[in-house]
Image 1 (cartoon, rainbow, N blue to C red):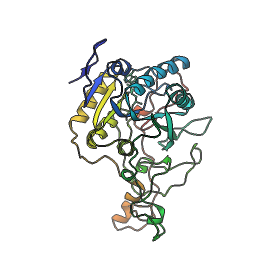
Image 2 (cartoon, helix red, strand yellow; image 1 turned 60 degrees about the vertical axis):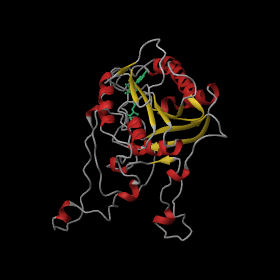
Image 3 (cartoon, rainbow, N blue to C red; image 1 turned 120 degrees about the horizontal axis):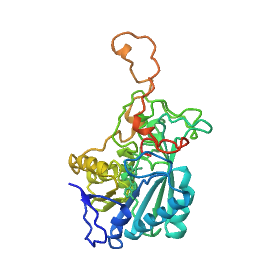
Image 4 (cartoon, rainbow, N blue to C red; image 1 turned 90 degrees about the vertical axis):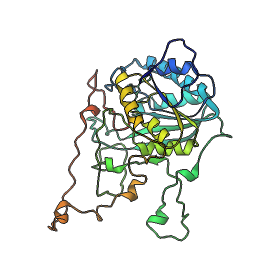
Length: 336
Ligand SMILES: C[S@@+](CC[C@H](N)C(=O)[O-])C[C@H]1O[C@@H](n2cnc3c(N)ncnc32)[C@H](O)[C@@H]1O
């Protein structure tokens, strides 16, 4: 069932619901200070082909619209609440300053999420990262659950070092999640230069929403910045990843999505989920998939020990490259 936002109505917050409609209108119906954690991955204004939203506004209109929806998000946050914003290079600078100067938030971490999925930019380095701004209302009072997000350290994994904290270490502020989705690793023409361990197995997944974020990325954010039972808001639900992960992790959730088609799909996705379900994707991909050296080719598996062939380039889902409008519009990538 779709919950449609009624203009001008004053409703109590309906938790654990996806509201189909404009997030600004929906948020205006909420009182102040209800939400513990907001995660927003808005359209980046790069001409991406969404179902109903037109992603190519005049720059000043996009910024004015961003000011409106961010103001509503900040208003509905609790005094100790957290706001994570995912944004591309084009408007990262303006939105970061807007959140700090105009809305009074403090930036705790500027996380770079780097990824690749074969997007070629012809006259610049290929796009392979997005920004995740970790913003809080009160630097003296906010949730940051370090124990929930630790990862194994190099001391533990590589050096067998006795001094290693057996609980692992906090992740860096440059994140790589799900390298299984990076069949070609990081290539020399990209704007993030990194030499990861080469993984031996990769899993491809094509979704109905080209901007679907990985559950593991949202898992880290939700675990770090909220407790069980807290309210998690996503004003731009998209494929519903934030809401799905919030439900799996035992949080209350509240989402908005403009498109009826996406909203129906999100509701189908949420219906299949129970609190406590495992998140999709590997929790610690660099150690949960074998290295190339540990991997096995089909030929080896079948008893022919000829040298391993390079992995085939994965096919891009068509939805990720479809853009409306101007030819210079770049496709958004998995998760962005
Ligand atoms: C980048 S996608 C979000 C992807 C999401 N993070 C995920 O993991 O699937 C942005 C979404 O915002 C929706 N949208 C655009 N304008 C909106 C508005 N005013 N209110 C609610 N949703 C909106 C678009 O339809 C699109 O699905």
